[in-house]
Amino acid sequence: MVMRYGGHACNVTDPETFNALLLNGLASLLHHREAAL
View (spheres, rainbow, N blue to C red):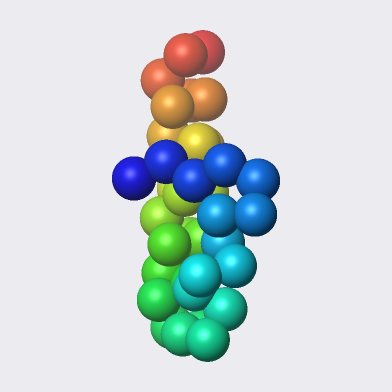
């Protein structure tokens, strides 16, 4: 799932889901960044 600017607004009412998506997104970015090195 790829969210563009403002895409997070739909999850504001569900903090746990929002946090899970946020953490998963950050983990994916870090993982891809490390893999690119």
